[in-house]
Image (tube, rainbow, N blue to C red; front, side, top):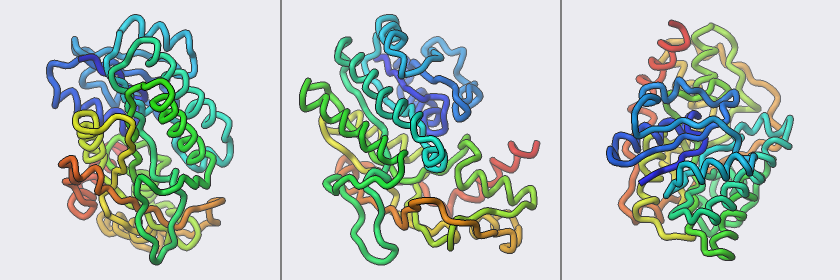
Length: 317
């Protein structure tokens, strides 16, 4: 089996490759990444020279390049992580999010049709559902309406609908997963957890948006990778699956937990003007996925100390 992973040098994509390479020692893997600021070959350095692994640098928006890639490597399965993902960046410059997340996904779908891919799995986000109130409001299910509030979330919702249209119109075998916030090693330091760890270790103010009460559901990146594997093996074609760990925590409480682990004072917290359109709360129901046999294995409480130490060692060698 040949598995093409787009965005495989990024945070989640590199973890997925590491998980799959170990879980399926007889399969071959092609990593496609355009190596933007968030893609780093060092994330996959431990298997760059393995015979069943191929690294390809290129842009999913380039239709001719993608066609050549498919013709050359003939993948059986495509797992699509490649995306612009940072909400703040999408507010400042939304165009690249539309080009990569929508047009790029369309280029891949067209190639999958031409070359008869066996399974196209699209990695999406819980942000496509919009926001819940801080108090009350049932977690989002796969049947919840899409109500994205940021250019990033809107671009992902658009690509989700495009993927489903290729299933309904052309019969392309697709699945979609919508995951909550990920945490783990190798994350680019613009994201909340590594950013706050870095600031705290430097003794600098930790910028927290608004009052810090915005709530997110956090899932360990390895649990996310396991969930995608479950969907590839047991999921139903044409279906959407939510992936969440039911670990809801406010931004301010998470920052305080990190400061406690680091032994740093809470006085480092600095409240800054809120992000435009900042969603109050995300929470998703993963019952559909859990019915396939998956459940999360990690909790923030159990893993945060180890995670903080990982970043401490690498940020300040």
